[in-house]
Length: 352
Image (cartoon, rainbow, N blue to C red; front, side):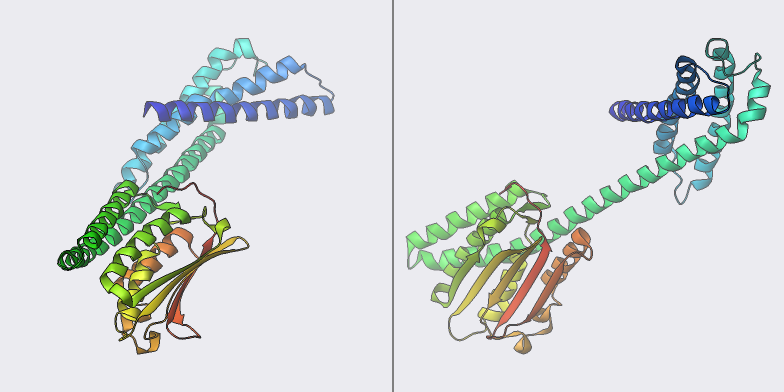
């Protein structure tokens, strides 16, 4: 809270200083055009002091909005607090103006609190309530950002939790089977699994990684799956080097590949191929995951884009990019199924 108070104070001081300097120019030239010229020092004293008086009241408004935001359930309490505070602020400001006037010279004659209130009450009341409105707008914007971040983390955690149990079971089952035939291969699978889990834990709730990091994670995943599929799975990579540093949502590609393996390659009697293609197209990144499996028309409904993994992917993309993305799952012209992901190309440092 102390840090926020300092930040609010600095911002309020900067904003009101700019306003005071701007009004200094207006005050000086207005009097000059009216044939009543004033010195720059007097114009600055009148205008800047008047503006800077609002700095502590601005900080108070932001502090009170943090404590008493107008929200459903207790809005009447918050409204009451802000209205009472507004009246107190107007009164305090009038008292300070009367106290400072002998040095500043706002009034030609010595003012009283009653006179200041009579001439400035409505103006100062509206101005303070406008500050409360600005503080609420920023408060709500911050709350929305926090909720968005929490939702993104929750979706990522749900996806990770969904992936791990059956993947761990399948991988350990593969390693156990290999132990009877090829101990070296079994050890390699377990080492790859350990590295995959290490990367997953290292990423934690990180919402975005570089495409390079995401593909390294995906490569480990596919190497483990190749051990499980034995000679029935081959993988091809067609990667544009200029696309590798683009930021992508963490674990956004794994559900697409898992979908291709489970519903495209696994039902085949013969071996199949998964091809991952990534390229830049102007300001957009396009990633395609293509399998030459049974095809989307022969697949069950969840293979056609309605499954939990793909539904989670759609939800994450909509949440992160709104309308600025495209995600499709369709039949490929040469057979099989192709999942296409198009998102804005924004550079990011590798995180994995």
